[in-house]
Length: 356
Image (cartoon, rainbow, N blue to C red; front, side):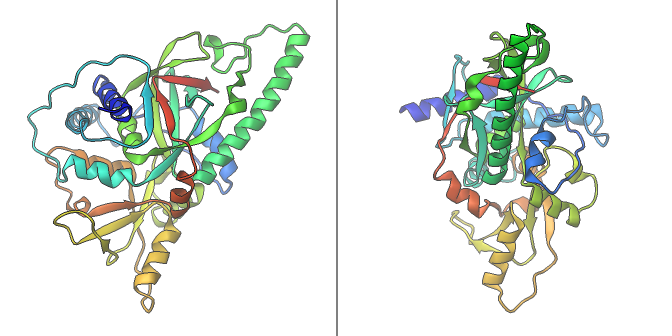
């Protein structure tokens, strides 16, 4: 077994050792400037589940996801250099449950073609935002490289400002603790922001993390361990496009990711036993471009939108019956695919840097 395979095995095992959870959600306001995204993703998470879910239903859903991911873990691999710093227990035995509507390996392969982007320090340690309500750290994966770049630029500007303010306070003899994570932090501004960079992580890894409860050691919190939560963040323009199609509450909740599709649009399949597949696009303009390519003389049908997390659950739930996902494939942001080829692939698990 090579180093890459061993890292992935350890990563999958880490997921098995954690209890399943559904990340808390909170409402956010849409905006037109991608630079505001940093403020959006650092909003504190609500302490309760959506009002449409009863406690009993939420617990049942957790159990379903846990069972599905335990079965999926030996297959969900990727080329990203995922590393973990702690030893992990052996794989848990899969529960006797009916299979999902799609083989888990197929789901993993469909997800893996989509690159996401995350912000890490020079050693691959990800930055998380500290949430007081959950007393944990939120990590984010961006569907758009440009969105990640805006966040990184804003964060670096804040870092430079914080350095100046910290120096002024130190010179004035102010010892008030205003560290990156409040009472558990330090008054020193971490230099790691100066070496921060963007790396790429495949969607299958991000989706596993988004439905599993994990823990990480905060490098800037005296080695304290925190619960960690993960969300995929869509580009603002795509979120706004989804809200124009579906003006309900679904896409006003943090962590919701739109997927655009139209009836009658298919692509050739590279899966055995499947001739054509139905594409779901992360970016609306890619859908429009493909439709015009295939049907230059036809009007674009009504654009529809579905949600990534709901689609993922439909794919992996044991005994699932949502026929719409059987031939559904994910089409990445075309610009992101090109950018991902230029990005590093190192992303550490089990460690993080907490910021406000």
